[in-house]
Amino acid sequence: MQKTVEFFFDFGSPTTYLAHTQMHQLAVDTGAKVVYRPMLLGGVFKATGNASPVTVPAKGRWMGADMARFATRYGVPFAHNPHFPINTLTLMRGATGLQMRDPQKLMDYVDAVFQAMWVQPRNMGDPAVMAEVLGAAGFSAESLMGLVADPEVKGQLVATTEEAVARGAFGAPTFFVGEQMFFGQDRLDFVREALA
Image (cartoon, rainbow, N blue to C red; front, top):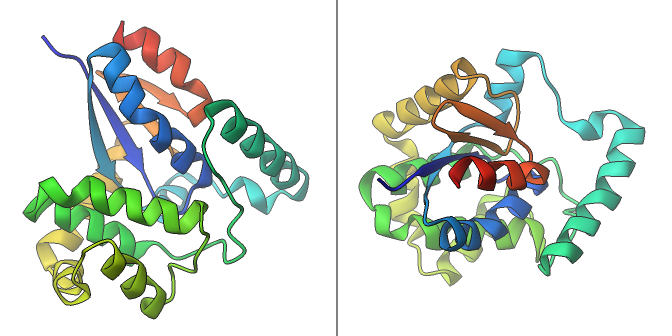
């Protein structure tokens, strides 16, 4: 039976972008199915009393260097986003809506948003920038806004966020292999072992 790794993510997390860059190879190497689970990191923080590491200046400085090291190790581009932190509610509802209504387009959307956030880097909290980036990736801003406004989509994002918290998540990225939870893109070796 094919194993599955659930990848709980939010576009606002640079370490989640780094993890995303490794998901395809992880699936190839392990034969596992990677299931992307959009959640709202702000909701997770609020529910668990956690906060972004950058709120601790020394940790924030360290993380900047550490993310650059991992980007080099992975051979992927990475740029600090000067607009960080960015409110990702609309973006995460977009991911949720596509997953629900047009799932074959989800990964194109995820790739485009992560690239805009952590490679280019753009202010994806600005609706005009968001429309420009997603339009260039082949998405209709009008249809995406329809998804974002859909009450069922809003409800699903809340439900997934609550599920993540109930299962023990306190930040992003969080991975589950069955009931085993792993936090952080620097724990992918343990995810691989759990899938082996």
